[in-house]
Image (tube, rainbow, N blue to C red; front, side, top):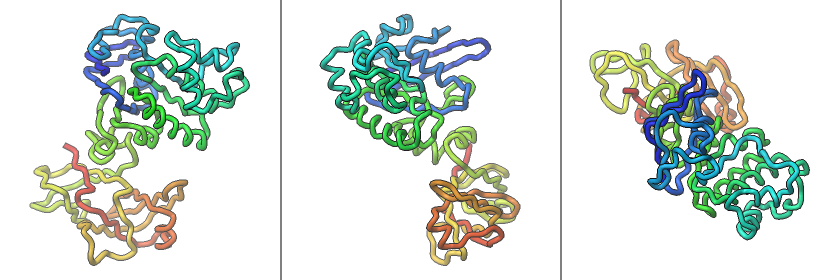
Length: 340
């Protein structure tokens, strides 16, 4: 549906380079990356607001690289709603080139803003303004919807409400979407695939599961959630984390290398399990127990190396976890990811 080839955009000393990127029909792609990595520039290049130094942008095989933004049939939504303050909601929704009254009424109904049509933007809440902004974008009947952190300033309740709204938009209008976000949970929740941008280059594109469980490198691993990186040493045919033997999912023919395990893939036990399919039982001592809004973070030192583990409130209370307490970290060999 969307294909990008050899894209290069220059803004001062910053260069965005994307050799190849595709979005399939009806696909949802989330884009993650540090501030200043080129996420917004990438969206604006697709929309036509950031001119290309090199490369092509094609929609359904048609080259739109040289078209101005208003002829590309691409809609973009920013953090700010950018509504015309002197227009009512109704006039804002009808402003787009391809908008028509019947379609706008249909969208207003689906997005629950029909009762706002006679109001002005300054009479709306932040959540209502963003709904109107989304409705206006859809009213132009775009080939693709681009979203640049549109829910960044919304409170948690409104954010949760907008999650359902975005899913409903996908099901109702069947349009491909690209979402730029700093929120990992948000990115993984929506996406068919997730792209990682670093210093103007896309360094990884994969399904949410694969990026989290099998990241391409340590940068992608760190950017897709908390991770423990364990230095492993091979001694003969056995592998060790410090002086503690560890079981790996496969043989590695290197003397020293690093493996990764996510905090959520480790179980804490107050005694060594006697009957468990998990082959790794590492004895350690709790360094810190840090409460969280969703999970508790427990830091455990194993032979001089600190690992982070996520546990629920119920598990924390049941085990009565305290700093200084000896525990076992239990995990399967298959939970370990070996970097090439």
